[in-house]
Image (cartoon, rainbow, N blue to C red):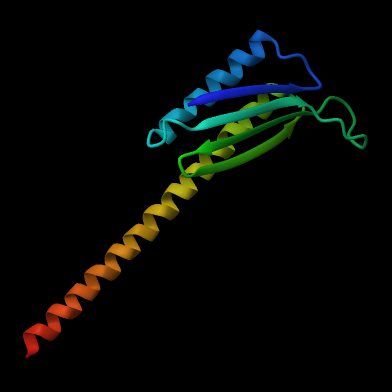
Length: 125
C-alpha cells in the first residue's frame, strides 16, 4: 500500500510522519487483496473559530482496486486523532467486507435453491 501524507497548518516532522506510516501500514493486512491501494493521509490543525484551544484533525482516504474508504477525526491531541481515524477505517473495512460476503452468499444460496427447484421438477416427471 502506498501512503501519501500531507500536513495542513502544522509542520510535518519526522516523528509525525513515522507515527502515521506505522499506523496506516498496520492497515495493510485488511487490504491484502488490493496491493495497489493508495492511502492519502492528511493531518493538521482545524482552524474553525468557534473551537477553543488546539484541535487536531486526521483524515484517511483509501482508494484502489474497488476500494473507496474515508474516515476523519478531530481530537485535542494529534496522535489520538490518528489512532481514532485508524480504528474507524478498520471498522468501515470490516463492514464492507462483511456486506460483500453476505451478498455473495445470498447469491450462492439463490443459485443453489434454483438448482434444487430444477432438480425437483425433473424428478417428478
